[in-house]
Length: 400
Image (cartoon, rainbow, N blue to C red; front, side, top):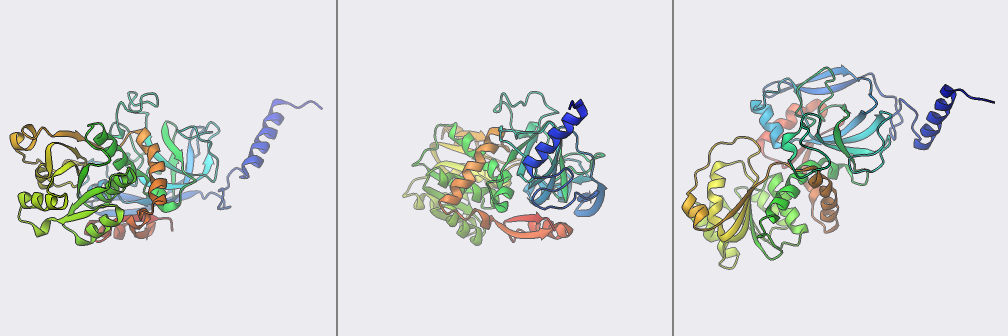
């Protein structure tokens, strides 16, 4: 019996569906039909999300529809919530998210690392290349993600499903994404902030000063500083002093690998703090320092903690936090300090982060304890207020 082209294509589609175990229009793993609409937490005015409902659009040949499982609240999200510094309102936020593929376009076969993907796999997104041809997969170190678009910080459009604070998100062609099905949900939520620190430490290593036996100061023990300590610990750096004004966060820093701590509330100025740091380093200042706060005063102080010929990585200013006052002679020139800036990550750093998380878990670092609070999507305003109160660490918004 001869078959026409349409019959052949129908048989091929049936075989592929049988191999994936997921009929078209069904959610892999969940076993339910994809709904016609999805809820999106839309920031419609300062400090106010509204839960809106939008039609789920058709999935194009290069697109992926993902059912959201959870998303962390980033400091950048908090700035947008309070001040809208990027002028995005109304906007669907959320860029630390993860979820399950429920439908894929016919052209989607592998993730950005070449790993096969199928409905039911868990993924995270990184950057969107479409707006900047200078950022390509063929030169991953040319620019960091700051020169590209990111889901959760996109202007609203006719799709609306643009951020991870939603029931579903539509990942469009030209995006980068990774199959992370081998990581648990909490670890997947932490991938994006961890990538920030993997990038920062790689920048620090480029100075040639950060080594296994380095004495390191990490200033600022919010999620970013705590993860910085964890990355250093997995690298084998064992002499780390944490600096913060919150006693609870300093205690958690020791769980993440810090060997000592300095509470700046116990000292009268940067000079006295430097003496306190030196006492814990056996009379020495730091070989290298990471400045993880968004405080101009924090940046001004950090130079006092570093030895002559030491190094500094400044990564705390993800937005314009104001000017810092330093003395170029005493703080930089006469000490010959090597300074690098770090802002977000490259695509290669993002992929490296998966191995970091596995290593951190393997040596017993309490990474998942960073997520101190979880809220359903319907309570996203409460989640943001918790984040702004700074009474927890990483706040996450989870699928209802």
